[in-house]
Amino acid sequence: MSSGSATAQPVRAHAHRTLPLRVGTRGSPLALWQTRTFLERVLHFCPVLRNARAFEEHVIATSGDRIQDKRLADIGGKGLFAKEIHEALLDGRIDFAVHSLKDLETEMPPGIVLACAMKREDARDALVLGPGAGELVEGDPYGTVPAGALIGTASLRRQAQLLHARPDLRVEMIRGNVGSRLGKLESGAFHGTLLALAGLRRLGLEHHASVVLDADTMVPAAGQGIVGITVREADGELRELLGGIEDREARAVSRAERALLAALDGSCRTPIGGHARLLPDGRLHLTGLVARPDGSFLLKRSLHGDTADAERLGMELGDSLRADSPADIFG
Ligand SMILES: NCc1[nH]cc(CCC(=O)O)c1CC(=O)O
Image (cartoon, rainbow, N blue to C red; front, side, top):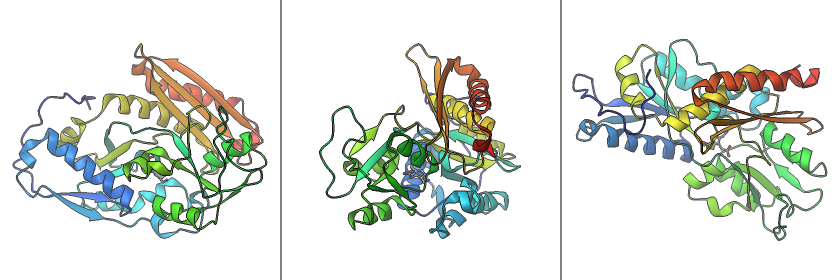
């Protein structure tokens, strides 16, 4: 598929297509926000859809939504936020689906492809501290976190990087959507938590962020901040329509980050970070990280290269990180 930019050719009329187009989405406030924002984008690029009742939202509960008391790593990994949505797509109950790219497995099930990636929201993580946190310490991202504090997170990537920097902290599992996590924090169950800034911002909750962690301090997850759209491989018409909306930069960085993740092929118990950005000269800069969940080992490396080689760059960095990690990391 061509990598259409935001200024892509006008999308052809799709009058012969049966409307409404049925869009699959999870039901969390964040998922619904992302879906509605994406649909507005489609209408912007495809005015012919504006008059009809163009879309029908199908909220699909996924295993990841239903099982709230366990780490994803212990119940089969990130694919669980997409499994039931993939099934609905393959069964023809929906026509396309909107996901957080970071929740999508690197290898799509047969018959499903990524149609496009939306412009990235800020990829960084934020530290959210509960009532009673101290003053921000200049130059020290974790300076406000009291010694021995309890931090709630279900992400092994965040846990490993946090404990590597602050071995004195304690980490406990906390899942649930962004709102419920903030609620637990307010109730005093934890001193702090780590959340994607993108999610907070989209929900109008950015003011809860105590510290925004730069991507070097806390390497984000591959695809964090990017919304990705899945479609049936055989649906050429919809692939063309949605592909025309793709953000070029998001496509390049997500290809590099997802290739890195695929090359590392860690189990979902391996803390892995991946973050790519475009340099001012147009080249792609990719940082990758692997660690032990307790932070006792952490390896971080960067590479840069041609945007056209995004995938090769990701694979190369993944291979190099894997080669220099102790055996237990990928065991
Ligand atoms: N795993 C949950 C999830 N999936 C996507 C986001 C945030 C939005 C994004 O990364 O685009 C979040 C919440 C979080 O990690 O704080």
